[in-house]
Amino acid sequence: MDIFANKAIKCPAAPPTIASIASKAVSTGSEVGCPLFDPTAVIAHFYKTLLEHEPSLKTLFNATHLADGTQASAFAHTITTFATNPAALPAAISRIAEKHASLGVSANHYHILGDYLIRSMKNGNGTGGDVLDTWMKAYNSLAEKFTDIESRLYEEAVGREGGWVGCRPFVVARVVPESEVITSLYLKPLHPHPKGHLLPLYKPGQYITVRTFAPSLNIDQPRQFTLSDIPGDRSEFRISVKREYASDRGPAGVISNMLHGTLAENLELYVSMPFGDFVLDVEKKTPVVLISAGVGITPMMAMLKAIVSQPDNPRSVAFIHAARNKRVHAMGPALSQIITSNSSSHKISRAIWYGQVNPATDIQGVDYDFEGRVNLKQVRGMVLFPEADYYICGPKGFMDCQRRALVEMGVKWERIQVEFFGVMCDNVIQTGLGYVGAGDVRHLGC
Image (cartoon, rainbow, N blue to C red; front, side, top):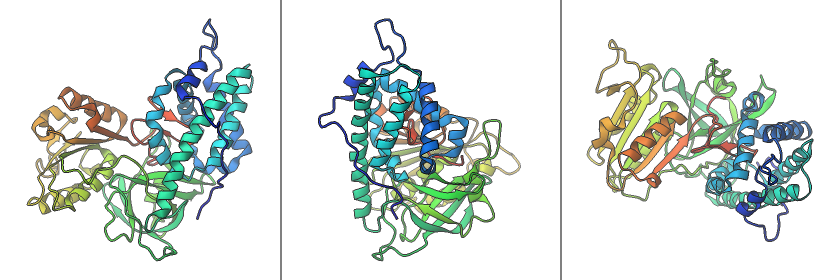
């Protein structure tokens, strides 16, 4: 079911480079350095007018992030980045396009957003003439790049055996608690594929967009969740969702609490094809180091299962994970079982850190290995391999710390891939339809 329109966007026949355009539209505006416009005011006006006049677009956005200003702040940051450091954007285009494809973003959406963005730049900022023309050319150039990539992604999706475009109805077939805060949901298609195909194959580390109606918000809401298992018999998808409770950092997660509720089983959801480029290269034979914290374990479990499913490719694996304590440590028994069952074909080592250890229930060497914060230098011999590939997933501070530690130990920067789960406004690239940072941003419970 394709739930979006698909009009072609008109872009310049020979668009100038983003760098040359943005350098003209940089926020100096004149020789004396006065701002062209206030990005915060522009973006606040942009979202207000956009959603007032195009209410159907609300289903593209996380309503919580719209309400608390996170979405607007991130986009305002990108406007500034685009003007002052345009080289930062092209490197992120592929990752953003993957997320857009999971949301079903069409060329027509870029046309609409560009129109409202230019209107907002005109609104009370004294911005006009050459400046607006420059920004419009820049925006169209970017829109063309995104549209080209996303069109290819849609073509690949529908051309894949079992593939589709847009959202397909699924049902929650069963619910399995993994810890006190993480639950796995097994999703089965509500109706057979028109051609009788099974679910499509996907790469370990990819995610799906899940849409459901949120009664408390009176609107359909999208969230992205990692596929936390390998395709198997291709009859179902598995996602593992962290329940977000209300705290001083924000309100309770609307969708995560719905998916953890007593009515989750048999709940009907609308699901996208798998997308995302934080993925394991299953063709390689080099060692793999998987480093995660909290719910960041989900793509790592999919990657580990993919590795051990290839007995003829006995790659060495180091599995590093951090959890606050045993109660919230998800998939611990499953990890132990994988290591034990594949000891003859794969060399798998693990190091589990608990922030808090309960001596009465937690067994060192079984439940956990170290207490405190992850310190990769403690396990230097475990994580340093020639030509290894490193995957990190977790909170931004955790990822920054582990990446820095690896680089300090001599790991090449380009061998480290990161995936951020959560909301972040620093180092964000934002297109107005969704934002990504040092990795894809998943809405896990907001």
